[in-house]
Image (cartoon, rainbow, N blue to C red; front, side, top):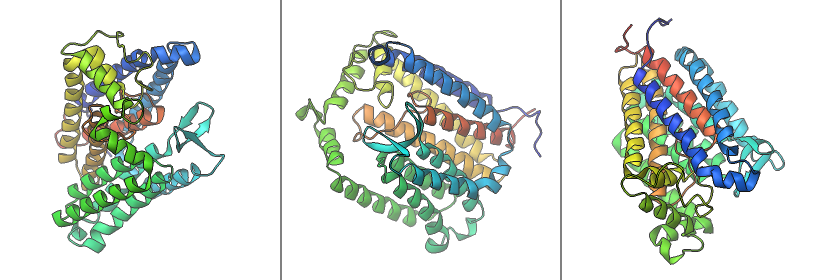
Length: 369
């Protein structure tokens, strides 16, 4: 049993609170025009994000005070539950279809994404499995394939929705966990090659994904359809300049940039707060990732180390993908910016993950009374 008088990693707490505050501010600013048009309430999205933030903070506090060692016994059950939810969402009439993806469960406009829960459940399960498989990681079939197979099952179910963005995050996080567990480089390189081949195949069989690739290469060639969103995103970032137009003064949120409060909220942030604002947010994420991996390095056991690495890796991968998309550095795929984008499932699960990190940090060897 751990000492409850040991303090949490205060840096993780402060950075998370700052990112959460920035997120609430930017969700309101980015969505105010759309909220007014759709719901006659400029605070509609902001109020919902605040509700989810409160629930998420409660979940973070509970997770921070729940001994992470107990998660090992729950790991198989969490994974089974995740698979059941991923199957349930695919049933017509049960799962909700939004934007062409049947990825939500819920009633009306209130919904949760089982894929968000699956990401965290998979991290817990893989950390549990890999903690006992260190001596097997040299073996492709005994050490590498079993955890990879579990991740691929989750990816297959999520791709049936379909949701390429979440699938990429899961595979990226899985690779980080396998690397942290001591997987051989040739196995990881082989997995990367297989992943690239699968990505090409998935693009080839879905015309809308090919459209995104074409728009990524030359968005200005298709300014009214495939390239529209990335062009508007780049306009927003370019208009912000060094210090931005000022909080609340975005022009792109006036129905130029579609759904600016979700995947492209960083574009509005860059427009209103400028290059310096964008860099500040990225610096906060960098500090969070640093402290997360530091927690992994000093965790008291292998399970805690891998769990910290998985949660931190998930956050890092998601940030890289989101910022890469809004800056036109990688092809568009729908994925939220942790703590910043509108989205209840993502926000709640991310804060729960931070709570687990905090619990591990208070048991780490560098923790002080």
